Length: 234
Ligand SMILES: [Mg+2]
Image 1 (cartoon, protein in one colour):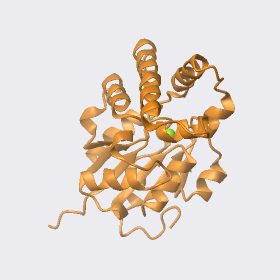
Image 2 (spheres, rainbow, N blue to C red):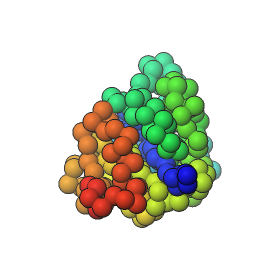
Image 3 (cartoon, rainbow, N blue to C red):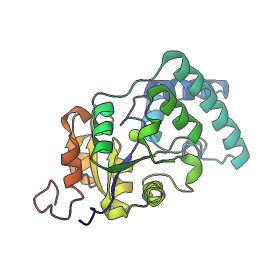
Image 4 (cartoon, rainbow, N blue to C red):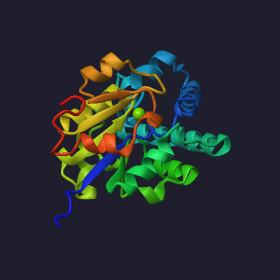
Protein backbone atom coordinates (compact mmCIF):
# COMPACT_ATOMS: atom_id res chain seq x y z
CA UNK A 1 0.00 0.00 0.00
CA UNK A 2 1.29 3.45 -0.89
CA UNK A 3 1.33 5.69 2.14
CA UNK A 4 -0.52 8.98 1.65
CA UNK A 5 1.53 12.09 0.94
CA UNK A 6 2.39 13.92 4.13
CA UNK A 7 0.33 16.91 5.08
CA UNK A 8 0.62 19.55 7.72
CA UNK A 9 -1.15 22.19 9.73
CA UNK A 10 0.68 25.46 10.35
CA UNK A 11 -0.58 27.33 13.37
CA UNK A 12 -0.50 31.00 14.09
CA UNK A 13 0.01 31.43 17.85
CA UNK A 14 -1.43 34.68 19.21
CA UNK A 15 -5.18 34.94 18.68
CA UNK A 16 -5.45 31.43 17.23
CA UNK A 17 -4.05 29.04 19.85
CA UNK A 18 -3.92 31.47 22.77
CA UNK A 19 -5.20 34.96 23.48
CA UNK A 20 -2.33 37.01 24.81
CA UNK A 21 -3.48 40.33 23.36
CA UNK A 22 -3.98 42.10 26.69
CA UNK A 23 -0.58 40.97 27.95
CA UNK A 24 0.99 42.46 24.80
CA UNK A 25 -1.04 45.68 25.08
CA UNK A 26 0.07 46.17 28.68
CA UNK A 27 3.71 45.56 27.78
CA UNK A 28 3.62 48.01 24.82
CA UNK A 29 1.79 50.62 26.94
CA UNK A 30 4.39 50.40 29.69
CA UNK A 31 7.29 50.55 27.25
CA UNK A 32 5.89 53.57 25.36
CA UNK A 33 4.93 55.39 28.58
CA UNK A 34 8.56 55.06 29.63
CA UNK A 35 9.55 56.65 26.30
CA UNK A 36 7.12 59.52 26.84
CA UNK A 37 4.69 58.65 24.03
CA UNK A 38 1.37 56.92 24.70
CA UNK A 39 0.52 53.62 23.02
CA UNK A 40 -3.15 53.71 22.10
CA UNK A 41 -5.72 51.05 21.27
CA UNK A 42 -5.58 52.36 17.68
CA UNK A 43 -1.80 51.78 17.63
CA UNK A 44 -2.40 48.28 18.94
CA UNK A 45 -5.00 47.55 16.30
CA UNK A 46 -2.74 48.85 13.55
CA UNK A 47 0.24 46.76 14.62
CA UNK A 48 -1.37 43.60 15.99
CA UNK A 49 0.22 40.42 14.65
CA UNK A 50 3.27 42.18 13.21
CA UNK A 51 6.92 41.57 14.03
CA UNK A 52 8.64 44.00 16.41
CA UNK A 53 10.84 45.61 13.70
CA UNK A 54 7.70 46.55 11.75
CA UNK A 55 5.94 47.77 14.91
CA UNK A 56 8.83 50.09 15.80
CA UNK A 57 8.88 51.37 12.25
CA UNK A 58 5.17 52.23 12.66
CA UNK A 59 5.64 53.82 16.10
CA UNK A 60 8.71 55.84 15.09
CA UNK A 61 8.24 56.70 11.41
CA UNK A 62 11.02 59.28 11.71
CA UNK A 63 13.43 56.40 12.05
CA UNK A 64 14.82 54.26 14.79
CA UNK A 65 18.10 52.43 14.56
CA UNK A 66 18.10 48.68 14.26
CA UNK A 67 20.02 48.27 17.50
CA UNK A 68 17.68 50.60 19.41
CA UNK A 69 14.65 48.75 18.05
CA UNK A 70 16.19 45.44 19.09
CA UNK A 71 16.97 46.74 22.59
CA UNK A 72 13.50 48.21 23.16
CA UNK A 73 11.86 45.14 21.65
CA UNK A 74 13.79 42.98 24.08
CA UNK A 75 12.58 45.14 26.98
CA UNK A 76 8.97 44.86 25.85
CA UNK A 77 9.20 41.09 25.49
CA UNK A 78 10.71 40.74 28.98
CA UNK A 79 7.70 42.59 30.41
CA UNK A 80 5.34 40.44 28.35
CA UNK A 81 6.91 37.13 29.44
CA UNK A 82 6.96 38.12 33.11
CA UNK A 83 3.24 38.95 32.91
CA UNK A 84 2.47 35.72 31.02
CA UNK A 85 4.24 33.65 33.70
CA UNK A 86 2.52 35.53 36.48
CA UNK A 87 -1.01 35.48 35.05
CA UNK A 88 -0.80 32.18 33.14
CA UNK A 89 -1.84 31.45 29.54
CA UNK A 90 -4.47 28.95 28.47
CA UNK A 91 -5.24 27.41 25.09
CA UNK A 92 -8.38 28.76 23.40
CA UNK A 93 -11.48 26.52 23.24
CA UNK A 94 -11.02 23.42 21.10
CA UNK A 95 -7.29 23.91 20.51
CA UNK A 96 -6.06 21.01 22.65
CA UNK A 97 -8.54 18.49 21.19
CA UNK A 98 -7.97 19.57 17.59
CA UNK A 99 -4.18 19.48 17.88
CA UNK A 100 -4.31 15.98 19.34
CA UNK A 101 -6.80 14.78 16.70
CA UNK A 102 -4.65 16.23 13.90
CA UNK A 103 -1.62 14.44 15.32
CA UNK A 104 -3.55 11.15 15.34
CA UNK A 105 -4.72 11.83 11.77
CA UNK A 106 -1.07 12.01 10.68
CA UNK A 107 -0.70 15.75 10.20
CA UNK A 108 2.65 17.36 10.87
CA UNK A 109 2.19 20.51 12.95
CA UNK A 110 4.27 23.66 13.28
CA UNK A 111 3.95 27.16 14.69
CA UNK A 112 4.35 30.03 12.22
CA UNK A 113 4.33 33.21 14.26
CA UNK A 114 5.55 36.79 14.22
CA UNK A 115 6.52 36.45 17.89
CA UNK A 116 10.09 36.04 19.18
CA UNK A 117 11.07 32.42 19.75
CA UNK A 118 11.45 32.92 23.51
CA UNK A 119 7.77 33.93 23.68
CA UNK A 120 6.75 30.90 21.63
CA UNK A 121 8.79 28.57 23.82
CA UNK A 122 7.21 30.03 26.95
CA UNK A 123 3.71 29.47 25.56
CA UNK A 124 4.60 25.87 24.67
CA UNK A 125 5.82 25.37 28.22
CA UNK A 126 2.71 26.94 29.79
CA UNK A 127 0.25 25.05 27.54
CA UNK A 128 2.04 21.71 27.15
CA UNK A 129 1.74 21.52 23.37
CA UNK A 130 5.45 21.21 22.56
CA UNK A 131 5.28 17.44 21.97
CA UNK A 132 2.63 17.90 19.29
CA UNK A 133 4.84 20.15 17.16
CA UNK A 134 7.49 19.28 14.60
CA UNK A 135 8.76 22.83 14.04
CA UNK A 136 8.68 26.33 15.46
CA UNK A 137 9.12 29.38 13.21
CA UNK A 138 9.27 32.75 14.94
CA UNK A 139 10.42 36.32 14.46
CA UNK A 140 14.14 35.53 14.31
CA UNK A 141 13.61 32.92 11.61
CA UNK A 142 12.18 35.33 9.06
CA UNK A 143 13.34 38.56 7.49
CA UNK A 144 9.87 39.61 6.36
CA UNK A 145 6.72 39.47 8.51
CA UNK A 146 3.21 38.42 7.49
CA UNK A 147 1.60 39.07 4.98
CA UNK A 148 4.82 37.85 3.39
CA UNK A 149 4.57 34.04 2.99
CA UNK A 150 8.10 33.41 4.35
CA UNK A 151 7.02 32.25 7.83
CA UNK A 152 4.68 29.56 6.48
CA UNK A 153 6.98 28.46 3.65
CA UNK A 154 9.70 27.96 6.24
CA UNK A 155 7.36 25.96 8.47
CA UNK A 156 6.41 23.70 5.55
CA UNK A 157 10.02 23.24 4.57
CA UNK A 158 11.07 22.36 8.13
CA UNK A 159 8.32 19.74 8.27
CA UNK A 160 9.29 18.47 4.81
CA UNK A 161 5.78 19.02 3.47
CA UNK A 162 4.91 20.65 0.15
CA UNK A 163 3.11 24.03 0.60
CA UNK A 164 0.15 22.70 -1.39
CA UNK A 165 -0.33 20.06 1.35
CA UNK A 166 -0.41 22.58 4.21
CA UNK A 167 -3.38 24.20 5.92
CA UNK A 168 -2.83 27.42 7.87
CA UNK A 169 -4.92 28.27 10.94
CA UNK A 170 -5.02 32.00 11.58
CA UNK A 171 -6.99 34.79 13.21
CA UNK A 172 -5.55 37.77 11.31
CA UNK A 173 -5.99 39.15 7.81
CA UNK A 174 -2.21 39.50 7.34
CA UNK A 175 -1.77 35.84 8.28
CA UNK A 176 -4.45 34.66 5.86
CA UNK A 177 -2.81 36.79 3.15
CA UNK A 178 0.52 35.13 3.98
CA UNK A 179 -1.05 31.68 3.62
CA UNK A 180 -2.64 32.62 0.30
CA UNK A 181 0.66 33.99 -0.97
CA UNK A 182 2.35 30.72 0.10
CA UNK A 183 -0.11 28.75 -2.02
CA UNK A 184 -1.74 27.22 1.08
CA UNK A 185 -5.36 26.76 2.04
CA UNK A 186 -6.34 28.48 5.27
CA UNK A 187 -8.96 28.45 7.98
CA UNK A 188 -9.70 31.67 9.84
CA UNK A 189 -10.86 31.62 13.46
CA UNK A 190 -12.86 34.62 14.64
CA UNK A 191 -12.96 33.75 18.36
CA UNK A 192 -10.86 36.71 19.51
CA UNK A 193 -12.72 38.89 16.99
CA UNK A 194 -10.01 41.24 15.84
CA UNK A 195 -10.97 40.81 12.17
CA UNK A 196 -14.30 40.49 10.37
CA UNK A 197 -15.37 37.37 8.56
CA UNK A 198 -15.68 39.36 5.32
CA UNK A 199 -12.11 40.65 5.53
CA UNK A 200 -10.77 37.18 6.30
CA UNK A 201 -12.65 35.67 3.34
CA UNK A 202 -11.46 38.48 1.07
CA UNK A 203 -7.87 37.68 2.11
CA UNK A 204 -8.38 34.14 0.85
CA UNK A 205 -9.59 32.03 3.79
CA UNK A 206 -11.13 28.75 2.60
CA UNK A 207 -13.27 28.57 5.73
CA UNK A 208 -14.10 30.91 8.61
CA UNK A 209 -15.08 29.34 11.93
CA UNK A 210 -16.18 30.94 15.24
CA UNK A 211 -13.79 28.79 17.31
CA UNK A 212 -11.65 25.65 17.06
CA UNK A 213 -14.24 23.42 18.78
CA UNK A 214 -16.35 23.28 15.63
CA UNK A 215 -13.51 21.85 13.54
CA UNK A 216 -12.54 18.23 13.35
CA UNK A 217 -9.40 16.79 11.86
CA UNK A 218 -11.17 15.29 8.85
CA UNK A 219 -12.55 18.69 7.79
CA UNK A 220 -9.05 20.17 7.93
CA UNK A 221 -7.59 17.19 6.04
CA UNK A 222 -10.16 17.50 3.27
CA UNK A 223 -8.74 20.92 2.34
CA UNK A 224 -5.51 19.30 1.17
CA UNK A 225 -6.92 16.01 -0.05
CA UNK A 226 -6.43 15.60 -3.81
CA UNK A 227 -9.84 13.88 -3.92
CA UNK A 228 -11.49 16.95 -2.53
CA UNK A 229 -13.54 18.48 -5.27
CA UNK A 230 -16.38 19.81 -3.19
CA UNK A 231 -14.54 21.12 -0.16
CA UNK A 232 -15.17 24.61 1.11
CA UNK A 233 -13.64 27.27 -1.07
CA UNK A 234 -12.62 24.90 -3.88
MG1 LIG B 1 -2.66 35.87 15.29
